[in-house]
Length: 451
Image 1 (cartoon, rainbow, N blue to C red):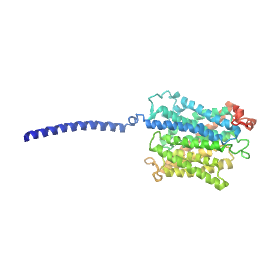
Image 2: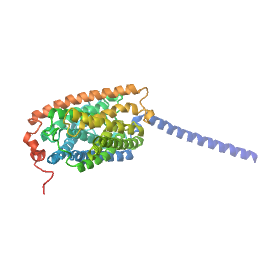
Image 3: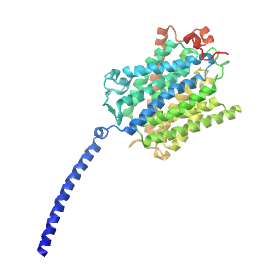
């Protein structure tokens, strides 16, 4: 009997041993497979993530919402009543034109090929994008659409520099050429694997790509076009602070997609980008308001919402790399420095950058692009710089990238304006047309009808 029990125990042990060996082999295969995937990024990210896709779809809509109707209404409220339709027309036409050009060639220039300074034309008309194409964890078609909304709003920002005195034909020629010659190549340099990406430049959502380029082009536009007839002695105040505030509010909401969407996924990076974006805008608004209150005795609505835009532009390049302390610091710096820049450009230098595009967007974007080298460090609750990268070396990369971008944008923008002038028979409307207003003379419509 004891011998039988011993035999049964040995048999059970043998069965257990064989079962364990079988389990071990199975788990070993699983572990090896997981290890292979972890070591092969292309396999690790070969699956579409529905959460990321849903968020970037929403972000794409939010960024388009920034241009139409956000920026359009923001600018429309700042001009005279006789030029409201023209401003709205500029935004709508630029959005349509640049969307088409982005599909035709812009996306290919920005995100195809491995060139240091220029992509290639292998993906004209986006022919290489299929239903199965992925960019990370989202469809490539969605990535291209998200980037398209950036390509739309960047030349639209420049509109603020030349309102109330430019021919509509010149707007179309300038915006179209500028997208292909300036915006798309700069995008390639920084986001498309080009020269500055190789240097390790930090530009999370467009401090250099969007704001530095648009601001520089705006300054060139103001100088090339010259001042409005009424500048500076009899420039009329904004005709509708109401429209401007509504447009600014849309910009603020849309900017969550602009910065948060640039994480290209629904995760911690997107969440923190949204948080710091909001707090920077709020702080900069208060800074601008208190400066005006102290200086003039009364805070203005237009001033406060302009401060908001300054805070948003300043935090944009840093938004995915910093923590909340960095957002507060950028709000303080953006609100103050951009206010001083407006005073310098418009007040002291007498440059008629009509809606302060360079002083707010250009200066704000450049400021944030420099300060990210400091604020991204762990000392300010940031994500930290790359291995072996110091604040000084990162600052050098940021400054070099900004300088090259600004110089190229200035030279190319000047040349494009000259081409637009040749094709359009001049880029500026006649004096009597400017007096009558662009709504009637350029578009045959009125924004307001007297009762």
